[in-house]
Image (cartoon, rainbow, N blue to C red; front, side, top):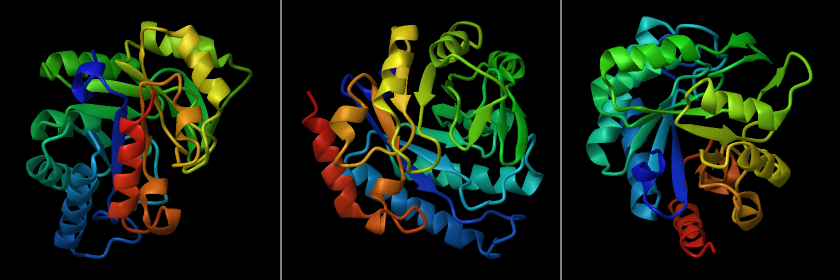
Length: 265
């Protein structure tokens, strides 16, 4: 069960947004700087009370669909390995825009415990183009690797839209039952945008036994309302200085968010 990773309370999963990796347009030609920032922010998250951390190649805009380049995978591997060495909480991986197989391979090598897959089951139209789920390949690759890595899958992921009318609850149920996802993620329309409580409720009703996370827009002001029906949240933007996603992680914001999680009903 994915709940076993984070303990019985609602999961507070912080995000390490990596600086640009090798090959990306804004790559700074200094992998040490990438690793040092990742280590610093992972430590802030753990010490502030997060009980999980997910590492993303967030600086690699514009993102691409399909398999990522070898240098991106190599850079991500080194960064995840370092984060996993310096914290004791479960570490996860999100390979943007949707390279689940590379994320799974990195997890198997580094000891990361989970991956986030933006489109695991179904097809979505994103700014980068059509993104097709690869549940067939991902779950078989995990079996072949004999890797104890949880697959947490978005349902109608942010920064994308379905190709036609889709029932959110039905898609959640299909992702869990036919895609065999270990957990589900529901989010708002874009990074930092609040997730509708009605969407969280709809996914919970459709997949009542699934581990369910809110994937965007959780703040100190809305946390009680937004994650009432979820098992936790992945939080990035509101933990940054000034609540701006491009800024560094703010230790005081992490501490306050952790306290709110501890006091949730």
